[in-house]
Image (cartoon, rainbow, N blue to C red; front, side, top):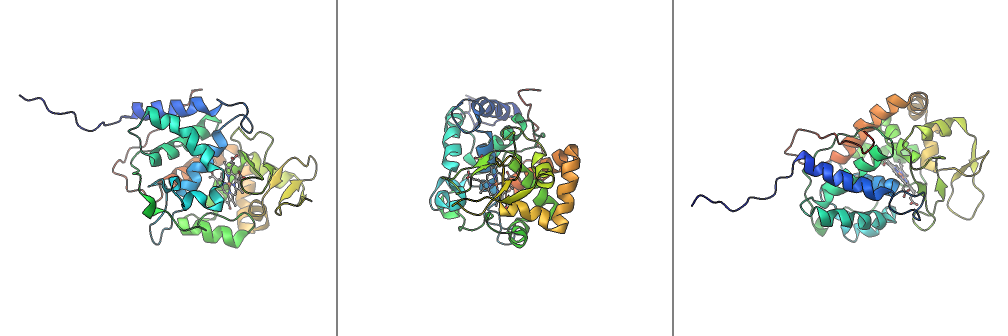
Length: 286
Ligand code: DDH
């Protein structure tokens, strides 16, 4: 007869939208966690999975999801990201056809959009790789350093100064945890809403060294409840970076546009896509 066995499952845009919706649903599922949202830590997972890219050797990047394995899972920069990986297991169980690499990046997109950020065009095509593809430690930024280090790290991925500043605006979200990085506190007063507040606060607040036994970080003089890392402060010390900080502080739309472009680029570094078309997912609030 002409009956053929079923081919491999060919997911459509609708199938990826279902994954998006399931990620959206889990974001606020645990009131006890941090500020009540898994959104920020999911953004961080997508960023750390992607930010290992090295344009010279074409190694690292989101294609592979090698942070599932030691040694990469144990790299200091990745402390705390187990929470993000674990929370996504439920989504993976429900949609086993999606690769971890696609899931982690899609989850970061969903988190940003659901927290009020811009639409981030995304496409599938990442394949999980094994432990041999783990990247060496030291490819992600070290928060104790300044502008030279930022340029070394981000130029290696293929970004320019404007893109470094645009990416850094993600610190509107989430917080530092003493049991993860050693640093403490949020950057903004609304750590579960995506805004350009990171830039506004950098410029408008007075910052001084926090007096404590932890690693060197800044606190805002007026409320003493916000923080900046040395790498964040480097964005206003450096003249070229500062120009972009000022532009994004003044113009939220400009920030949203540039962030969408640069975050989409980050998630695609080193991925050998077959598909040209990018999907723009519906947010649950659309
Ligand atoms: Fe970051 N980040 N990040 N970051 N990041 C931390 C938290 C979060 C640096 C250091 C830290 C980006 C850039 C940099 C997010 C997104 C992004 C923490 C605290 C440190 C430390 C971790 C902890 O204790 O839990 C440094 C250094 C840089 C840099 O040099 C530029 C970028 C580019 C992004 C991005 O997403 C595009 C997010 C979100 C968080 C909050 C996580 C959470 O759990 O909350």
